[in-house]
Amino acid sequence: MMRRWAIFSRAFPAVLLFLAVYLHAGDVTGQVELRDSHEAAVRQHSDYSGVVVSLRPMGTVAPLKPTRVTMTQKNKTFTPHMLAIPVGSTVDFPNLDPIFHNAFSSYNGQIFDLGLYPPGSTRSVKFSREGAVRVFCNIHSSMSAMIVVLATPYFAVTKRDGTFSIANVPAGEYELRLMHERATEATLQALSRRIKVSDDALAIPALSISEAGYLVIPHKNKYGHDYPPDSDNHSGYSEILK
Ligand SMILES: [Cu+2]
Image (tube, rainbow, N blue to C red; front, side, top):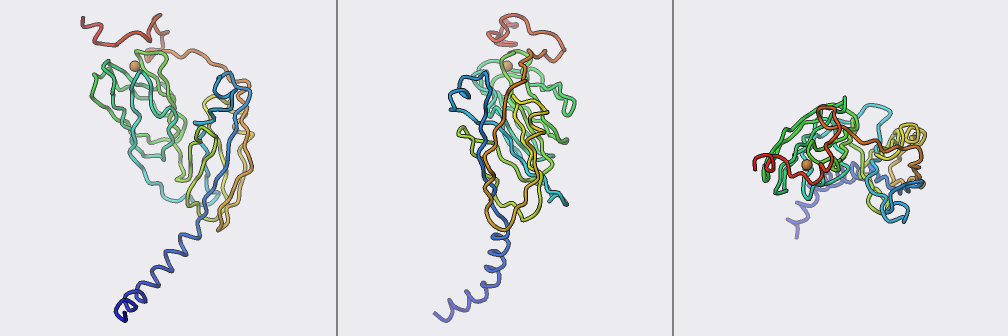
């Protein structure tokens, strides 16, 4: 018993330090609602997913921890559709379909072209600059995704019910920013705000994003041309080889 107590008392300062650091940080939670949408699931209030909520410290930004995450291509769909990563992270794009794909981005912040690659293989991209990168497939015009590259370690993506939770945010002042692929720049800018995080958990008052003014413009392929008609039924290189 004495021996156990001795071990415990020696570990006690470390436990206290851990608790002090842990309790200093609070979870920031909230809920985002989408409105004025053309999407059926949004109009039925059944899908508010894919909004990136980020907190940028007003003071010095804590060091980022780049990660390695996956965006799959399966059933001619990129998953997840919306991905948030810290600057310096790498994304793997495995092709899990029995057909070829060619993921690319023409967006200024991060131009890349993974080329045509066969079923079962993968390619990766490192994202070194902050910004929202739209990802498309050069074969299938219906395939799209967005990767939001952030210069802060504090962010979350909303679930279908619109809720989000950013864990262990240290006390301090932050700028809360929203990124949603079907909202205009002006709408998102107007919703950004300063928040103060104390040592306790913080619940942000409900956020509501209007999709009004967002126009769906057909995107071009990687050569800047329109997709051929019926491009979504195209199985890529395997068809050309026949
Ligand atoms: Cu494709």
